[in-house]
Amino acid sequence: MVDLSQARRQPYAHQRVGVEALVAETHPPSGRIYPGCFALFDEMGVGKTKQLIDASQILHQEGAITRVLVVVPNSVRGVWYDNETGELSKHLWTSQPAVIAEYRGGSRKWFWVDGKPWHGSCSEAGMRAQDGLVWLITNYERIRMKAELEALLSWVSDGRTWLVLEESNAVKSHKSIQTKAAMALRRKCVRVTLLNGTPIDNSPADLYSQAAIMDPRILRCKDFYHFRGRYAKMGGYELKQIVGWHDLEEVQERLGPYVLRRLKRDCMDLPDKLEPVTLSVALEPKTWEMYKAMRDEMVAWVNEQSASIATQAGVKAMRLSQICSGWVGGVKDLILDEQAPDSALPDPEIREISSEKTDLLLSWIRDRLAEDPKFRLVVWCRFRPELLRLVRKVEMLDNMRVGCLIGGQSEAQRREALRLLDPETAPEGPTVVAGITSVGSMGITLAAAHTVVHLSNGTSLKHRLQADDRVHRPPQRNVVSYFDVVATGPQGQRTIDFAIVRALRNKQTLADWTAQAWVSALLEE
Image (cartoon, rainbow, N blue to C red):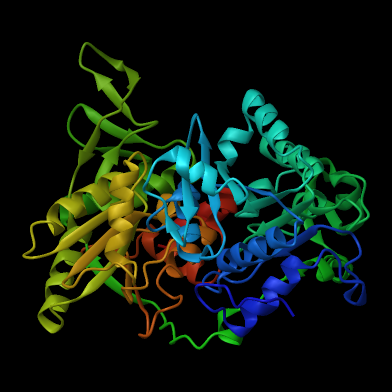
């Protein structure tokens, strides 16, 4: 049994099991014979990060590691690094000093001394933390760069570094530069751990590179093509496409000793997640005409000189989603030049055409505030213009605190938004935090709210699941409600919103849909 008496937050029973598994180098009784590799694939909200931080401090006390290199998606970097709201600041032990550095372009660092972030001089902190565990937080985008990778390879070459790959499906492609970089780092590190709540995005092929990074001997396949030849069913043009899988029980048996996965319902006493409710809103006649033109002719005229054009089924579906959300424009849109009406130029302009969804949500928020003056809400959007418009309008509500999670914002802005719905820092009073699903849905805690609205949905099932679980995690004590805002025609006609919401609720990843699948969905409207 590991000694976790020094932990600032005593772990749940299942977290103790996870810490023991992370600390153990091997476990022959279960078949875990290759040393220093493990995957913690607990469901989102079960506490993977805490388990790893606790295990790291035990291993540091034992002299097994001196450094931890954590590689994360760029949007998750602050979840680890931030010295106020980050996971390290929450779970580092009071008895052990630490140095936490961030590596991205320029390096920053802070010190953990005497059980709290150090605010004195750096030289004094360095002296007091010189024997502490050193954490280096970087992102997958950095390790793709040759110079950055070489620097990191030098940093981990001490022989006692633990490599942690957060959201490990970032290395699912055996061909990608970041996967090859992660493999190079693994060879220099004494340990590697993969963290992921959704390890399989698309198919069992996602597991090959993740297993190979841990140890190539686990699956006993010399490369991806060997793996594919053993377990995949090939078809399609010249039999070059994977159309199915077989003997996956064998893959599971080989991976089993090196993977720990628990579901929240099996190990935590959390309140229920209610089935999502649909909030329908009719498009205005003018918007509906534009929608039908894009659906039927692939061209939506904004005015006499501007048009949004889609030439492929997938692009067409995205344009229809944009129209449902009240705007058109951006990449691949076309504007006709008055002087040369037959020419087409890239149009960076984004044009608002309506606001039916936003207006419905504002009215709905006012109703909730009438019921509960302290109402707190998380809103997820697919499109940036839609989110920014919503934030502007919500800010006009009386006494409303509003936060935004969006690409390109400063770390101070992101930190302030997270503090609004972090259970430990959330202020009293009504609060709305709105975020872009693909940017802000990973690794954060928004459990001070228990209501989630998807104003528009993207095509990634992973992002949807991640977004939904930001509120359904400790210390949530309320039943969590979910709502999808979908647009209809003036007479209740179905739009692309219905196809997307239906697919996501059925646990389908639309990002993998073929053109024919999109065509079928559009024909079902």
